[in-house]
Length: 80
Image 1 (cartoon, one colour):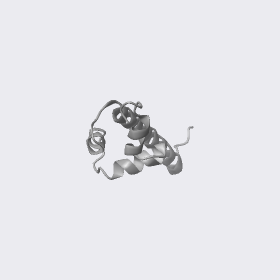
Image 2 (tube, one colour; image 1 turned 180 degrees about the vertical axis):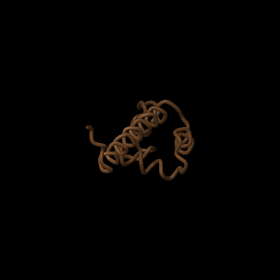
Image 3 (cartoon, one colour; image 1 turned 90 degrees about the horizontal axis):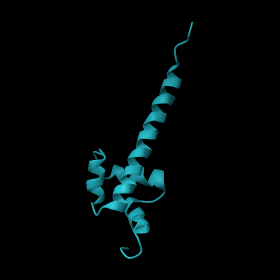
């Protein structure tokens, strides 16, 4: 007979899925920051962040820089 997953195992699975989805969301934000002139608040709203102030915190935690720093550093030299 199979045993049911423990509460800890379920929490770990949920956290891993949440972390994966968050990373994918930030990858999309990186693309939008590089590819468009849309503002950080607009990109945050497009990606489903309900608070424009939470988005930069998550972005920084994953990438190591703010969305504006990322945009500035990733633009081609003639645009930056």
